[in-house]
Length: 605
Image (cartoon, rainbow, N blue to C red; front, side, top):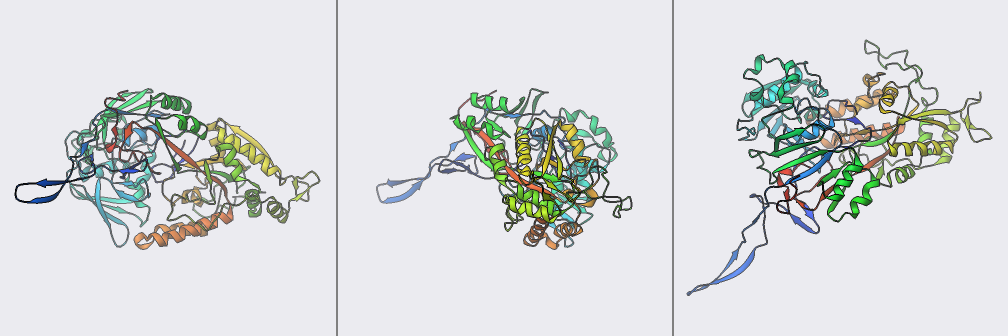
């Protein structure tokens, strides 16, 4: 898995999964009843009426029954496929570490699990300057670390100072690229000034903060390069999230205990046990047997087992990823960066001899039966996608675009207009006899992807396009992918989050063989200009931004650098003994402080 970009996580997916990580607040729907905790953390029973009679008069009064307290204690057991590497929130840039620290450290803002909008976390509120560059944050009153020390603006300042030092090897360092200055006004007020007005600037402010008082008494002179070696990374002692570290048995399980000083109130649960499992089969087996309470990130093949387990509740969401067929626009035999050293266009950058023609790229899209791919490879658990914005990012999603329906005749017509006529054997050829033959790469061991690759090969053959398929080991596949040494590549972007700002996939600056995320070598000055406009709009007006993102989607749809295939459905299974849950498309754990165990004394691991 790789990260890319300024936001918290953007991955190319190998096929593993991890549980959702972000946070917010909403009531749980159980059957047909809506249950919501009141301010005391209890479920209120309906009020009863009663008539009280005394000697002089009869008075109608309403008696409100005493709320039944929610059960306290017990453990929720969940699973992960990968262990953590670090427990330091600013260094955590891998799935295991992020899953661990997300329950123990919080940041300035968080994503609402249902709308995808930015909402306050440790911040109470913020205002933005007229030029769109400076954000003034006011922290919540009375914030405390788990050891009783106050959480202040200094903790934010030095956490981001550490990332700005250039001494830490973490992908999170990219989060501070656009931060020009951080100024602390007082313990609860901090001003963050960005180099450029960018409506995606809040993306940079979601990682958890360090408890600076634990690390050093003199943060001004602290060598931030030493942080990578600090014992805090494996044994932190102060926390801002709902849980604190209990024990960490590497490669086996984690134990996290409730934070009695958590700003939203101490969780009802005594703790969370996270078990490291070998894969989906083991996780499902433990869910069925009652050894786990929460499981997610599993393939559709396990749905029947989950649905047949009476104690499990199944939640379905569209995932924050999409599967795509990448079409190489550059020369795979001689990959070149799009830009020269002076940022001018590189005149040595060539064009793919076949896929450089837009008509051929669109013909490939019309030749594919995407619904068949979804039905066969995902058992129908996916939604076709037309362009690069997820349907769950509803405010920016272009509803005027429809995924290209399979149309073999139109595909053949487009190929013919591009000079590729069918021979007597039904194969597309140029007049000089050259066959239209392409090589598709994907990663071995991913059953969904290997199934799709075989179907794509067969479907393209029906319109005369011959495809050789290579399913190779993951690291070798990444070498081919980022090296731009392919014609077609079947892969997905994951953990996209609720954002439409994916310009890193399309800009000339990212068309760099060996490292750039624009590994299909797409180039459109118009699209790059549109992204700049969307991110620099005055007041970041969402309606105005949405119109620009819809234009970007329409242009990418027309240019067809990818054939977008589908947005897979994601599944979360939760044991019915756990109450208070209400997972959203962007998070399962956002309200974990409200969870409780229905069965007294159950689930102690």
